[in-house]
Length: 146
Image: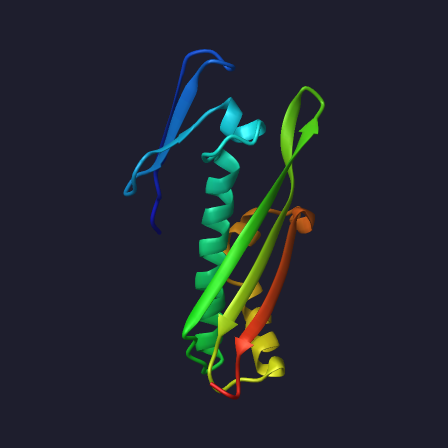
């Protein structure tokens, strides 16, 4: 199986410093204390986690739909990563995924069946024994009419 790589670097102190994160094959993304905790425009590590999980979930749903004999036009997933104070540090308390799929020729029951198959192929879900932090909501944008 493949190994994916990413890197991060931080320069300076916590309050006056800045960092960058980069997947091995994508541009570097800057971040700072202000972009992570103070609402300043920019990215943060939790956005990267959310993007990775949303991408994996969308691909897995497309695979599940394919196994059910359906061909999605598109699968769009948005992630909300909830970071909370935990003692002296922080923790990801919850990740909400909201997915909309445009799947011609399906109905709600067939779509729900493909979501069940998807649960078996999402690698992040397999990795985590404590799945209480992830909430998923999937909807059908277009079905029979498409």
